[in-house]
Image (cartoon, rainbow, N blue to C red):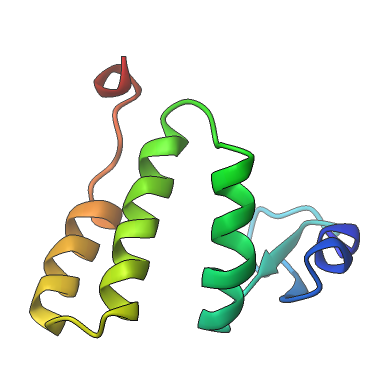
Length: 94
């Protein structure tokens, strides 16, 4: 994870604090919006995510655009809820 942080030059690494995690499990988190829009999203547009996760990435980009344009918060809530609260079905991607 530290190598990923060093590669992107943003974000932080944290030990995972959930009950069933291995002691060495880590998460990489980027919380600065400008880092997400200027570093992370362009990276994954140039190196596409495959499979059903590509749909999650598309939704993530859509929400990012809504936030960037400062559109209505109700629209953001609706889109965010649709994108992230529903479980993806891998058969829906086929």
